[in-house]
Length: 137
Image 1: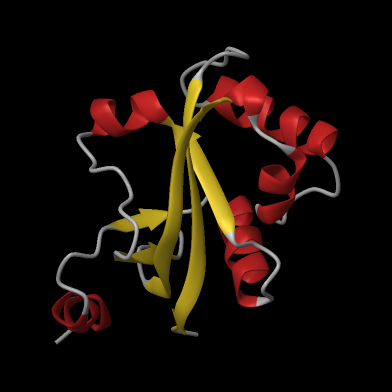
Image 2 (image 1 turned 30 degrees about the horizontal axis):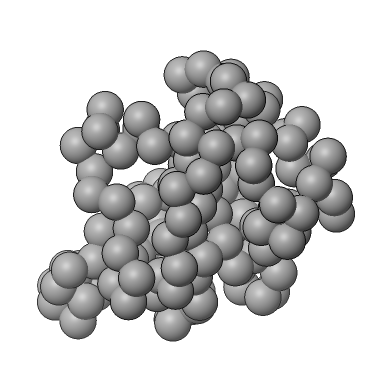
């Protein structure tokens, strides 16, 4: 039985996902979660409908995959907020662990969203706080 199959049995409602949009970013973000520096993530609300993915749910465990599709982490959602990009607070941005300021977060995330379907300052985001449940390294 594969590791992913075993995890899906242990966490039957778990969704699988990858952080980022390329192998280097994915690995960097997984490392930040492992170090306890990344406790939040966000995505464009439109991506969920376009990709047919369910929204995060408080209390649900999900499986973060390495870029190659192998399981890396299990996280549990602790809070979900739908918020416009322009309304993200500094505390929210810092919880993502990728930047040391709201301005840096905005710059990096504007570039990310531009690469992945489009950016608008008033675009709706699904902002998710989570805790690490299992590190599968």
